[in-house]
Structures are given as structure tokens and as C-alpha cells.
Amino acid sequence: MDCPLCAQDGGQLVWRGEKLRVIRADEAGFPAFYRVVWNAHVAEFSDLDAADRAHCMDVVVQVEQALRQHLQPTKINLATLGNMVAHLHWHVIARFDWDSHFPAPVWAAALRTRDAGQEAALRERLPAMEAQLRGCLGL
Image (cartoon, helix red, strand yellow):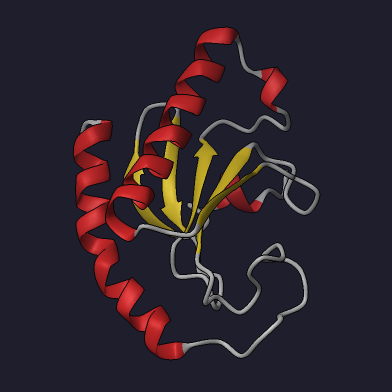
């Protein structure tokens, strides 16, 4: 099997539990782009039993709540696509009205030039948010 999310974390590891992990993705222009990744290789959310689905969504919600509390984004985007990597993972992306693509999806064409100053200021706030998230998730 040649699955990148089985072979590596898929980004900067924030937290790892028995069944899933939270990573900060390295997505240019989107410093608050996180993924909740199921540790075992499954392709679809419906591959999980009810308890595991609930656990997964609880973690997605906790990531969303931490982003909202610490960063006050304009919007949170949630997505689970799997078209490029068929390994169950949720995107949890804090979006801001100043980001280069807003209100379009992060995968669309840019609507404006990136704001390096805003991105850097946001990146400085991530360690505190991630520390609180680890506390909520039990690390």
C-alpha cells in the first residue's frame, strides 16, 4: 500500500491518540489549516462503527472550537474529500476575510494577493491554541 497518511503524519503533529491524530498542514496561505486523521487505513467515514464515528467527530468539533476561541476566524471550513488521498481525514480550516481565497474554497483560484503580515500574526497565535487543544484532547 502506498498511502502517504499511513507512511507519515501528514503535517506537523499536534496530538496523537490511540485512534486518530491532529496535524497542522503546511498549506501556503492558510496557517490555521488542520487535519484530523484516522490512524488506521480506512477510506470512508462509514467504514467506522458508530462509536468511532462519534469519537472522530468529537475531535473535529474540539479542533473547530479551539480555532474559534483563539483565532476568531470569519468562518470554519470542514471537509472530507479523499479524492487525492483515500485515507479518512477531515480538514478543519480557519478562514478569514483577508485570506487570499475568501470567500472561495482554499482549493479555488486566489482572489487577491496573500497578506504576509496577517499570516505571520496568525502563526504566532497557533502555539497557545494547540496547547489548549492538547489539554482538551488529553495530552
